[in-house]
Amino acid sequence: MAGPPRDQALSLLAAANNHGDLAVKLSSLRQAKDILLSLDPSFAAELLPYLVELQSSPEVLVRKSLLKLVEEIGLKAMEHCSVLMPVFLTLLRDDHHDAAKQSIISGSNFFSSVLQEMSLQFQRCGKVERWLEELWSWMAKFKDGVFAIALEPGCVATKLLALKFLETYVLLFTSDSSETEAPVAEGSRRPFNISQLVCGHPVLDSYTLMSEANRTLGILLNLLQSASSLPGPLAISVVNCLAAIARKRPLHYSTVLTALLDFNPNFELMKGCHASSILYSIRTALLGFLRSTTPAIMEVAELL
Image 1 (cartoon, helix red, strand yellow):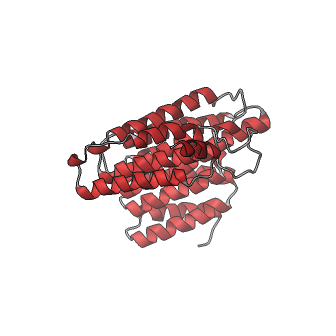
Image 2: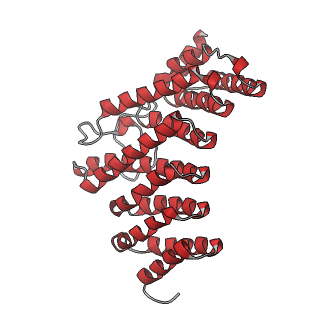
Image 3: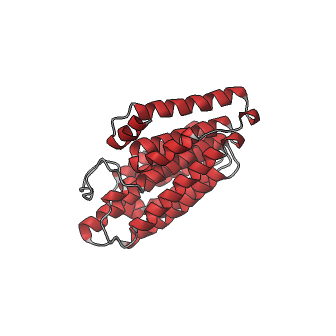
């Protein structure tokens, strides 16, 4: 396709939005992605509103591809991508669960990246720029939307990913005792946790975020207590999320262990296969604790 990259990208985005053939739409979107990612972010930024229009595409595969592209462009051109953020929120409530699931996956990845960038920017510059504060405001709305999906009736497949986000949220905002308390260095790829946050951050308040993490853990513990009324896959997911938190954040180990040991649902309300699967997931979690080499977990395990 001849012409300046901007014109090429516009033509491809128009085809992705309006062509009658799905294969052409997807191919056009892939080609547009290559052009957008090759451009300087400041030049690509003027094309992003045209990309947002694809969130109304009638084809779920186009909407899924759009979400992946929004994540990829957002990570490359974070400073210019605020215009793309409504896509995450709109497709979070998509009528097709495949699009909603992809919104949680891509949005979760971007959530963690924005959080990391906010920590690093304050560490490097002693301030957080306005555009990054705006992104974090969008991410707060995204978080609220995913929490609502986790707690409201809805598609089980989508709710499973929402529960995984709750686990991630707890891990992000709970200190990792296996690491030093030093802030994360620029260019580091180790997962963010609250211990890496520089004291006095103008936007991210450690105390508030840790309190929210504790409340989120409480949500998962309450869901465990109501497992009898949950679909089997959701109950199993809650057990797995709690077990992962206990393994990775020993601070919460005793709380989670006590909850799992006290777990005594009314399995008469469930189908037998689900009851067996839930009990198996609990046994697996407890065995995982016994095999753990984390000092805090080993100490408690020796007392059992």
